[in-house]
Length: 426
Image 1 (cartoon, rainbow, N blue to C red):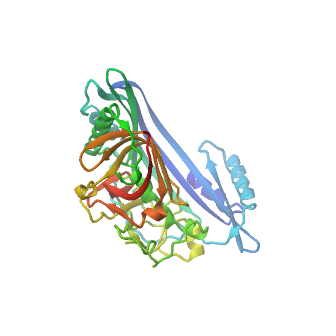
Image 2 (cartoon, one colour):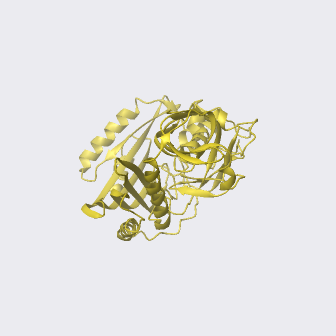
Image 3 (spheres, one colour):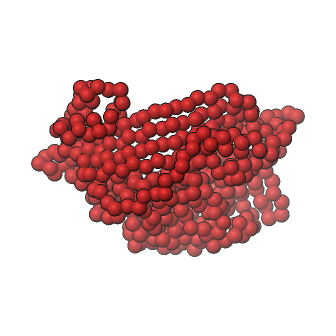
């Protein structure tokens, strides 16, 4: 089918094209407590096509994309492609070149056994340290084997396989008067049983502590420690600030070779884009536009060394040997976990929602469960919220030497921000 689409594209009025053909074999299981409620198998193919059209004597380039269904006839494919070309003529961007073929090191082929991945998840979920009062309410398992082929009009034609999985878990905790739920979603390549069991064991403890939590005190400005996947949002801010699209659109004013926080007195961030992270769901040979993925340092102790992103913006900025980054590794900080957890601070393990605005850097989150350390005792707390801005926090933030991986982000296990505004619930 893909080869047929290529032939039709070559015979069309398109001046360039990209095709991404992804087939997915997926096993899905839905459990209530540990009783299987239903399951299904998905075997699907998605073919996405993007066409390019030169405009204004080649000074501008238009583009449009859409899905071509495998069930279409030749005439229907031609009709869909002509529609895309017509749409592309209504989009005008300054001209840029598509990615060209490059030599690259093929990843060691992973034997993706989707059945075994699913079985490992089921086994791990049955080995959790549940009690009569802290237990699993329900969970869903999604295990996938993906095969992707990318082709463009410049001669790139690359195929590779990778696993992808997700588990959604609802944990319940109760006492004689109340019952609460905590939700978690885990994404990964395949099943990392030990880390999954460790994380859910923590959530079971959080549920128990949530039942006895006191109102969060009005702390004003305080140190806040992030020990869970919410910290990914903090480091995603650094990632987006180094995105070529953000740089070109003036959403980020960071410059290569210029320190982003000259007054910083805490730990400085070193951020790397890496081709491979153990058990990541994004271990690809090439990015979504066919650019070869390789290891590269993006930020070196708060100093940008390059920017990454789509071909269009990299072409405008003159950035070479880069790509759309997928996996990120953040170097550990200067402090041990014990040093991060010292003095007075609020450690937040559960938010109703936590977000970091990628443009402004504003952070906001409503506290569902935290632990207030007043220097003498530790009190579970709930309610209230935190706020502030990363442009301020980058001047004094601390990271643990120890690290923890969340799918395609490998980051310090603990991140501490100083002088965060904490609105209490008292």
